[in-house]
Image 1: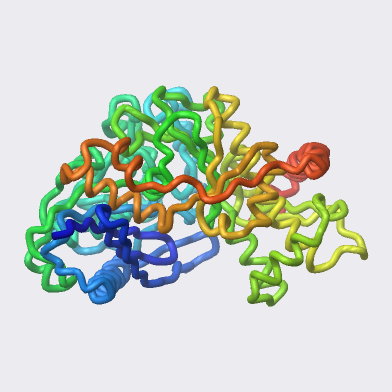
Image 2: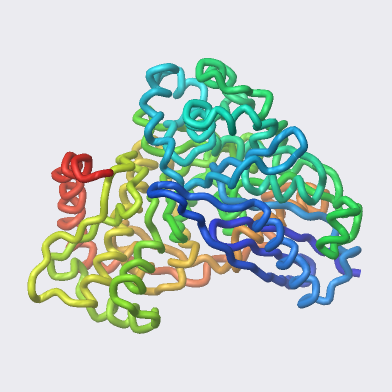
Length: 498
């Protein structure tokens, strides 16, 4: 009789329920979509009750599609969007909508946080820069600007942990997701008490932290009735989506980088040493894998920038045509540049006021140049991320591309040409889901460790894109100009920001 493992991947635009039969290499997945709520400019919220309703639907659909007996599912684990706040009162009821990672309202209090705590103290206790959209800043913003809400909060948890609570009845988090709150000490694997105390934030509202493979509990009878799962199924703690995606791509060793283009974009890798950037241009987080850390440099605008230009501006729906246009357009777009900072930027600028720019326009530029310039701009931004990781001492032997952007041959070739390195396309499907299912199997004892699990479950990359020397030469000249466009305009961005 086959043994199955399930994962729930709670993303920003959808939730997916995934079932893996590792013995027979069979996978089943179903998803449900939802929207981001924008009540005011710069705000970004979601309703966790909607998350759970959609999770129930996705679970029931994947059970129906797979025709698997729920009693054969050994364990369930989680992958989830990071950084956001879910606030519950003493009766475990939602106090408000979740304020998610895209939200920028706390930008107004970040300088105050640094004045109160001090940059050296923050770096020593969190190994990261505090920025808008992360839980610690959101909590402090609520404390200052909405104390009526803040005083009601009995439990401040991260997004995936709300779904885990609804299924298990227990409130916990893991080291990787806790790290993404920026209220966590990645050296000591505990909450950053000195920072919380100086800000007057109540540490007692934060959940207990355990490893990602920790057995949290079991599916409750109520959750079993709601989802169709079997009561008593083991629930494993889980982790942040960036880490789970790395595991699903087999990126568990030093020297392998992930280039991910989803809604946003990231360059990340695994380190056995606690490396962090003294200039605080990136993030160092405790990993799902014990005694390792995830080094992540992030740009806020990845696939969303291409979606914006294609659908919202050019009113195009056929991405095959877009890719064909881009393939027929020369590298460098005949002098057209694009800064992809439509929602501000993190690495390396850490500038919420940065804005998108098309630069170098002439009457000779048309639709194909606009489309390719956006792809190149995102790849230049990822190159910024790559260079920061290399600067702090991370070793790069191989780059594996993942996320929706990896479906485009043209975008992968652009990355290879701009990075000046081979780029491999991931063979894994639903990488974050797969990583969380592997975590469930490791936690339940089906695999002894992540190394053996990934060796058995993760396929080798399917295709490699080699840099083209003629394009590399173009981009070597263009990249410094891309960087200068931001530097020459950053003060103007501040003047026009609202």
